[in-house]
Length: 201
Image 1 (cartoon, rainbow, N blue to C red):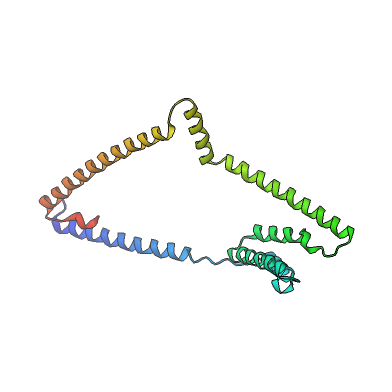
Image 2: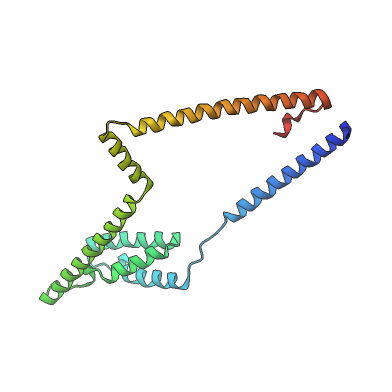
């Protein structure tokens, strides 16, 4: 049977190891967060090409300058965030923009109209995809269940809240039991070995 000094020494060693492990984990987590996005050559090329085309200084009037300023802000945000998909989308959107067609001939107006129709069709496809994503989300599924239960005269959210309260009460009772058990063990160690182990928590 180990004596009190041996137990104290072992407890001290374990405490030091735990502190070192915690310090190492914190350092690793901190170093892991220092990631800085490195743009790919494709991202740089897309950014510079689009910036050259949409720069606000190239605008012919104030309205176009404001529109270009907004596009340039989106471009800078996408580049800073490293969002290659958004960069590609901005390039595609601007490449097909009706605003690039200047002139008042029938051909120019026709090309602008075709591009506007193309933009509207693309936006409708994006909206359909967003709607599908929303309808597949957990929150939407829950909303449908709540509506179905309400139609049947039941309140699903109230039932869920009651179940959650019951789980919380059970967890609180279990926590109180564990605290009591822990206190009994601390008292035993203090009485038997003369050690206060509350500092190890």
